Length: 279
Picture 1 (cartoon, rainbow, N blue to C red):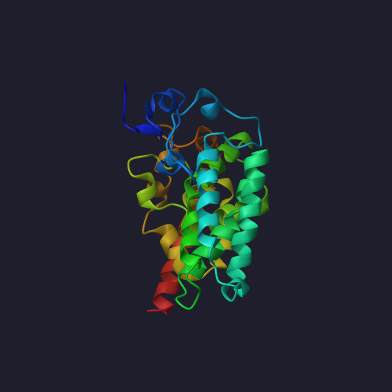
Picture 2 (cartoon, rainbow, N blue to C red; picture 1 turned 135 degrees about the horizontal axis):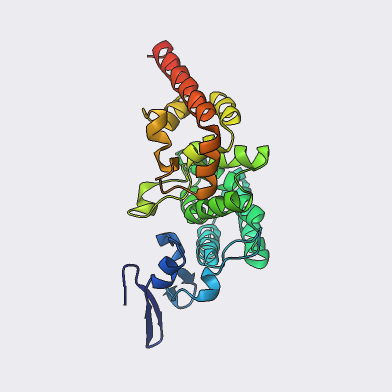
């Protein structure tokens, strides 16, 4: 049996071990953040993946395997807020964290993608707040707790793009772009040797003109990170016919390659001009 991602369920004297064979058989990559369910009494419960968890859900719902990360985030966030002094509860980030718990409970209950996406701005807000040393001590662990949802959200963004046939509304495009360019939803430690299903680059394929406009409205350094010194051919190499990108995005890129590449070059030129003007 393949045991690349061992998942162990330890309660009392019982130990069960399962591999990632089921996941790979369905073409899935389950991130490390989805492999554990933290239980307040038994400690860490790591249970085998089930066929039900990995099954393709109805359109608009999250895959049930994501509930592991969602439950873990909820328990970790509750723990981060458990002993917050009354004075610190007046901090606006406390309200953000409490609201996030309510949203997570809705995700657990209804399993809707839109509910999960509704946590993106909360993750970004707490991430930014955690960088401010003057904020109360609960902010950093709260941000880390909610950050457990990043990889699940990225997977669900990819699933959403597929079900929408790579045509998504403007508000979703803006939200997803913020997740990648402001929220740092793609972090190397979360993916290791796994293939990232989508990132900021893929947003250009969805609507290059809109993305260029949105990125230019952000600090120019975000655009510089977005471009990363890559040429258009390098940036979109996964979306040529032999690439390993999502099929719906390969089709869309193939149909609009000249426009997408031109917009990429336009943004790269704008970044170069901004860098020259702001040495």
